[in-house]
Length: 81
Image (tube, rainbow, N blue to C red; front, side, top):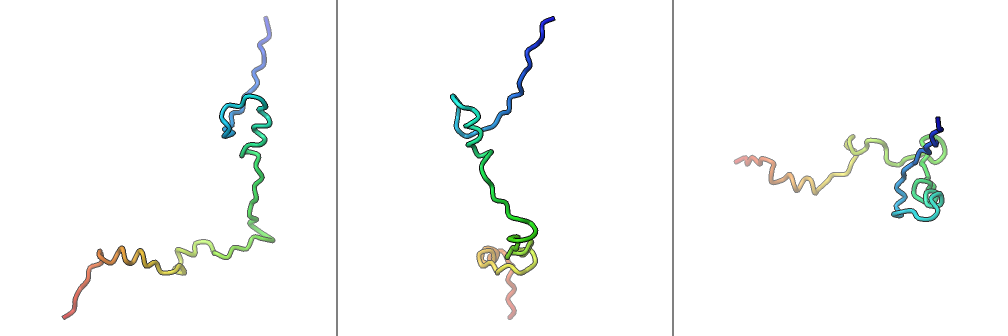
């Protein structure tokens, strides 16, 4: 029985460079996949957030005149004589 050749699993990645002709490893390493990322720490030094979580929902948000002016024609106006 002849041995079957081992199939190497191919990893597909969109490098954003079109068809890779020459050096596949260089194309993958210089793509967005291996780009340096700066992550904001969640705890400790540098993790302070000035805007608190959910501040728009708690009533601390500034008044939106655009929304008020859009809703003005819709509001029922009762005149008192």
